[in-house]
Length: 201
Picture 1 (cartoon, helix red, strand yellow):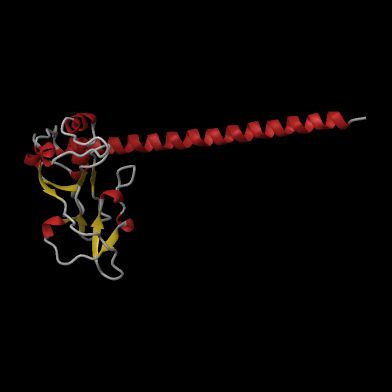
Picture 2 (cartoon, one colour):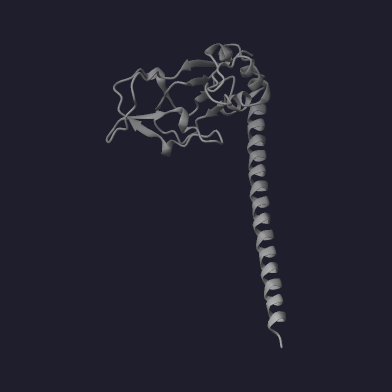
């Protein structure tokens, strides 16, 4: 199914001046740099900016999907229940609002981050130093949409696989630290043993 058939697509808010952090009040804002390397967005780390009254269409909430149209990878992230209040999404972010009877936000983000969708965006990418993809790349994106239960299973299995991968990396780092410790101790013992032999009468 084409992406516009399963979700609405909106551009983020266009900022025409430098954003300034608000000392009080302000608008909770999501900018490109707020997306962590692992693709997540932590609402506790977002800034509040000095902005006036803005149209509601630029605000996102839990259940929306934020798409990164600029950068080496054009990925998406589903906003989870930690987003207890609306936040302003700023260009070059796009906002996708899934149709709840057709597709889950987490599944939609997962599908966009998979190789077939990424290859689709590659065909639309512009710029050498600063890669960007246009709105038309979203309008023409095809997504395989199974039933909601299958979507839940795929999202759950993907989360487990990611957890397994993270634990494997952690275990490898711990093994490396242990090996270095053991080899360091062995080198010290050998050094001390050599010193005793030299000082022995």
